[in-house]
Length: 103
Image 1 (tube, rainbow, N blue to C red):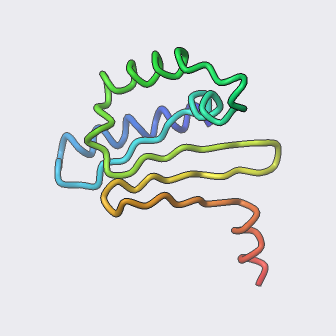
Image 2 (cartoon, rainbow, N blue to C red):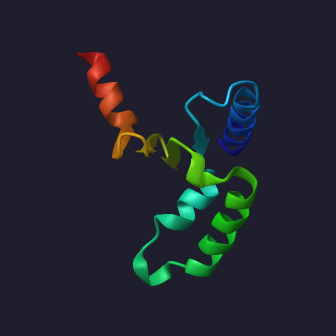
């Protein structure tokens, strides 16, 4: 998953170099997503702040239209999509997709 995430972000950066009017997308690694979805008692804000600051210097997250955040646990995954343009948060859940594909 991490390698795919890295390659996706590089490919998106190349596309934006050619045409800056395209929808700007960024996928957070499962590492940073894992750091953000822990229990309040074990949340380490400094670790997240440091990583997000580093990412923002490279990718300028404030200019993205879509931010994706994958969560993978055993045989189940969820992708959270923050749609800045439409001001929405959407979830794509593998259990729901499997359910609807069987109908």
